[in-house]
Length: 165
Image 1: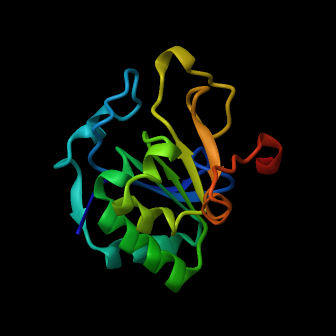
Image 2 (image 1 turned 45 degrees about the horizontal axis):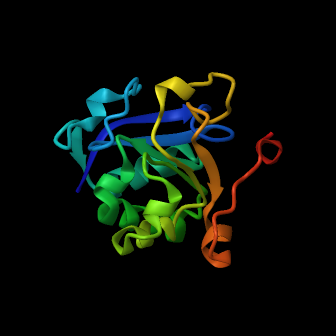
Image 3 (image 1 turned 30 degrees about the vertical axis):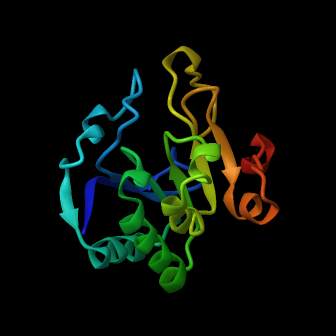
């Protein structure tokens, strides 16, 4: 079971094109100015099964974005869901996290989820660095990372804005 706050079917702000965004409960980052402070509560939202989520994703027929809260708060369960999305539906997956790439790769329990993600938007939201002109990010410190390339090269590979146009 996964704790889900909301599912946005057909969003265009959480990655390129229309996407199905799943907002997971639980976050310990507590960023000042967070757009979803209700997501901090790990008991928020409702429990949903992988099969329920997979049906919604298949129905919408869009790529997927994991957000929250922080999907890494439920890393093991979200990794299993992501693996099924990749194997059964062959969808692109973006993921937003308040962790920095450098932190995530140092934590072995996060590797199974990282291995299923195509693009990671990392780092906590910093209100003083807020920039509404940025695509797919809220503050200047956040990066858009090509996860497969980063894992294979052993170093973080950032995606440039031109690539996303």
